[in-house]
Amino acid sequence: MRAVLTATATVAALAVALSAPALGASSQTSARWATYLAPRGACPNSNTAHGSPATETQALTCLVNWTRHRVGLPALAWSPRLAAAAEVKARIVVTCGDFSHYPCGTRWPSASSTFGRRWNVWGENLYFGNLWLRSPRAAVLAWLRSPEHRRILFSPLWASLGASVRENATLDGATAVSLWVLEVAGRN
Image 1 (cartoon, rainbow, N blue to C red):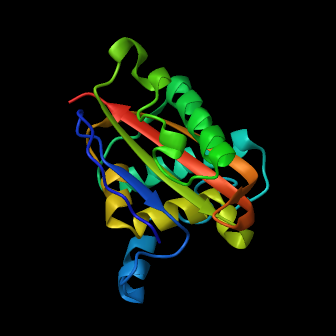
Image 2 (image 1 turned 45 degrees about the vertical axis):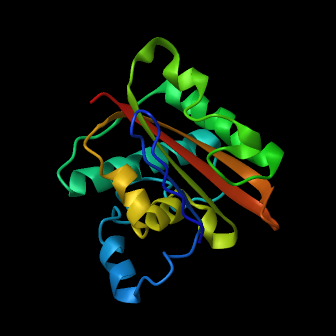
Image 3 (image 1 turned 90 degrees about the vertical axis):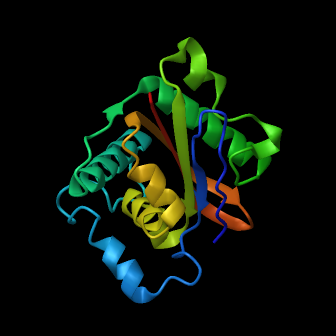
């Protein structure tokens, strides 16, 4: 697992996750965070690894909001602007083959999410997995198992989210992976 925590001028936290639990995390700790994930029937298509991007991002949104509700935080509103920023990020990551918040030296947050200054704080989670680890559920579970990613999921600053999934990408030598990008934003 590769994790990066960065602060921007707006104090946005960033993190990168792979499919495995955090290094050094005990199975007991991993199991604890799994209880914060929505029950299997609560978010339709959350175990789907080959659905349409719209179906899969809808399932991811449900899982993120269910997890936030579990800790007493409000649901995040879907933002087409943040979804567009997530799609741009996913495209750049896949094109560059660079699984990072700054693929090919790009800036974050993207211009599309900062235009008009609707928000002044941003966060981002990235994930990729292959085989059975491609689903929205696998992405959120990996984020829950990582302290850096939980900070993104559980921050009270966020008001909006957007997400994107890229299917059948090749990253870090793995083929046929799903790449997930979650963008969140708010005002403080």
